[in-house]
Every structure is written in C-alpha cells, then in structure tokens.
Image 1 (cartoon, one colour):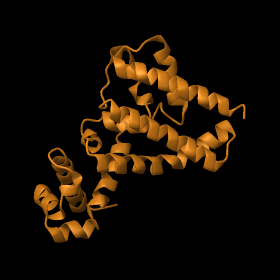
Image 2 (cartoon, helix red, strand yellow):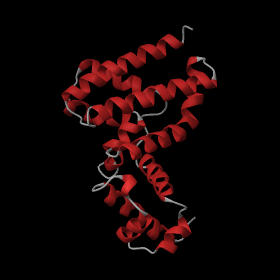
Image 3 (tube, helix red, strand yellow):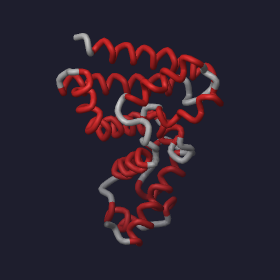
Image 4 (cartoon, helix red, strand yellow):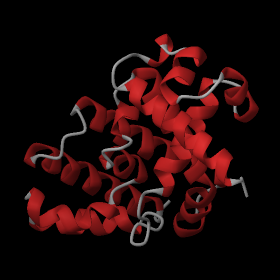
Length: 200
C-alpha cells in the first residue's frame, strides 16, 4: 500500500488534471502545466507516473470505484431498470434506480468526474478503460447466462457499452425526460436482444 505522502501527491496530481480539463483540451496539457496545477515538481511527477495518460488511468479507476455496483451486478441492472421505465420516464421517480445504469453512465453522473467526458480524447480513453476493466466480470457473465462464446460475449459487451456511451455523449449527458424516454427504448431493445441470445 502506498504511503501517505505518495497518496497525497497522487491525489494532488489527479485533482490538478481535473482542474486543467475544465479549462483546456487534454492535448494542450503538458507535464509542466500539470505539475504547476498540482503543486509538485517534475521529478516528483515522474517518480509516480511515466506520462499524462497514466494519470488518466488512475482517474478512470477512481471514477469506477466511486460508483455503486451493489444492485447493478452483471446485466441484471439493465433489465431491472428497463422494467422500471416501462411504467414511467419521470426523472424524479426514477432517480432512486440510477445505480442500475451501466457503469459508464454512472461514472459520468458523478460531478467530480463528469469533466472526463467533455474532452473527445479523454472521453474515448476513459470509456475504453471502463470497457477493459469491466469486461473481466461482464464477459464471463454474458457467456454463462446467454450460452455464447467468450469472444461473442466480449463483442456484445463492447457493443452495449460503446452504444450507451455514444448516445449519452450525443445528448450531452443530461438526465431530462427526453433522455429517459430514449433510455427506455434502448434498454428495451437491449433486453430483447439478450433474450434472443438464449434462443440461438
């Protein structure tokens, strides 16, 4: 486990990255600029990171860890949320069930990490991090539940996560009634698709 000084330094660097992303594109951020924002020296930065994308990797892990997966294990959360949306698309009524959303949407819902989805490079980078990390449990879940190969399960999961990401990005990550209506359609579509897999 990292010592307290290392943890404090890394937190400062990550907070510095989030701060810079609120005002500039990732491609214009330099190690020197990040060090100034974080209040650390370059030598200290390179003690912990090899480059800027290492900081994004840690931010992606932190953002995923900050989500609540207690009810959203596997695809059961998607199916349960689709059932709730059959009765209403009222944001207030559905608010208690937002932890059932796919992980990429829950990450973007966190005000601290939402900035990660405003920069095209960073958002693509973060979503692929989420995919690589979540596939460890989603691939076997889909394989076992729907009797498909590991490769097929992986591609089903990639399709689902990239599709959800693209739709949310196109709608500006807003959770209004129009968003809930779209989600209702998409989740019903996904649920039907998963059911169809059982018949293959």
